Length: 64
Image 1 (tube, rainbow, N blue to C red):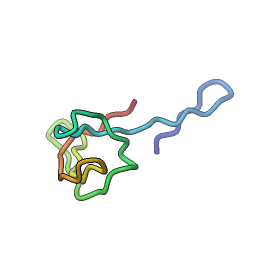
Image 2: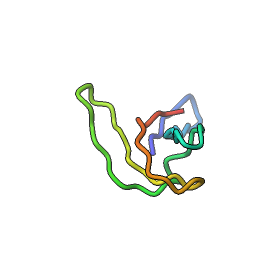
Image 3: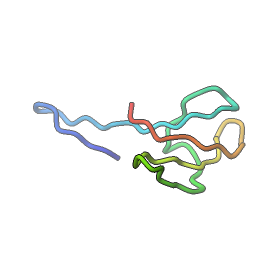
Image 4: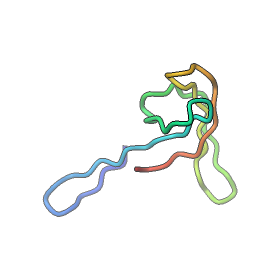
């Protein structure tokens, strides 16, 4: 979990991945991790099982 200090409060960045089957963003913490890889630009691409439709998907990790 990415934690940032803003003024006197703490902000936790939520990481999400996109399920093409459901057409929805899903919290990474709610998925079942299968694999992670890095592309040529250093972006993380997660292979995961979607908790809603139970399909295996690939998505870039995005902080929201």
